[in-house]
Length: 125
Image 1 (tube, rainbow, N blue to C red):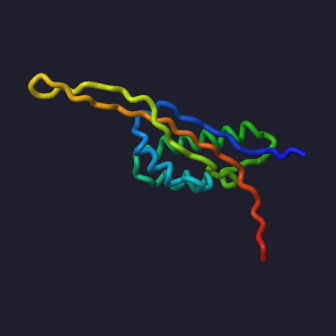
Image 2: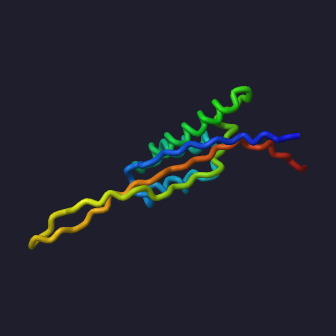
Image 3: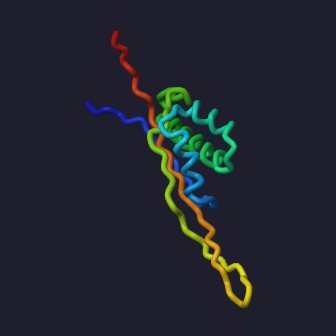
């Protein structure tokens, strides 16, 4: 008998924000239920909170599309994995005094979210 694994993922590529700043938000919601994570992110005062919540909502929608016969609400789903990787870095030049030039690195990142269905917890009394 084969057990079905209820999980799906969503990836946001080439987000024009540094990975270091987005990782702060990703660490904040790692392992949370989807509904609780989205509520937390709506009150967070970080610019990347909106982008992370968008990817989480996309992953939740992907799992609902993948398993249409199951009833999967946000309170039944949790964030199994969330990680932020470095993207491409755009190198730009800033003019400096005396004919010199300073380099400006415009960083980007990739956000990956894996959402899974929570297993029923057995309560031992």
